[in-house]
Every structure is written in C-alpha cells, then in structure tokens.
Image (cartoon, rainbow, N blue to C red; front, side):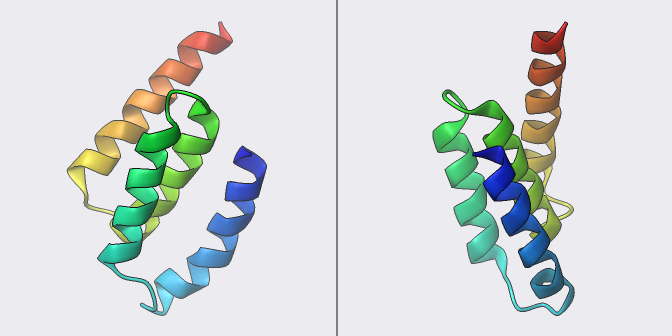
Length: 77
C-alpha cells in the first residue's frame, strides 16, 4: 500500500506548490496515517510525509515522522 501512497504524494506535490491544497487536506492525511499506523507503518509514514508537504512546520507531523522512521529503522535491524 505504501507504493500507492508514494504515487499520490508525487501527484500532490504540484498542487502544494501552487497552493491548491490547504490545512484541511493535511489534517485528513495526518489522521489517515494515525488510523493505519498499527497495521501498515510504511504507508502511515508516506501519508504523514505527504501531510508535511502541505504543512512543513507542523510539530506533531514532524514528531510522528521521526517516530515512524525510528520504528521502521529498528525493525529492519
């Protein structure tokens, strides 16, 4: 599922650059990531990274990305 979200992130990038996406979408992506973090952490990470594209200074989003990356990194070892 993470691959699908990677594809969507690439599609969203130009919309973010042109300011066609707002905080409402960032909230939806953030909440979706939280909803699936227990079952698909990689997909949750991609969703949270996409939310960060929209809201780059969001401290909660940044912390969740840090947590996800740490957990994924420790599970690879």
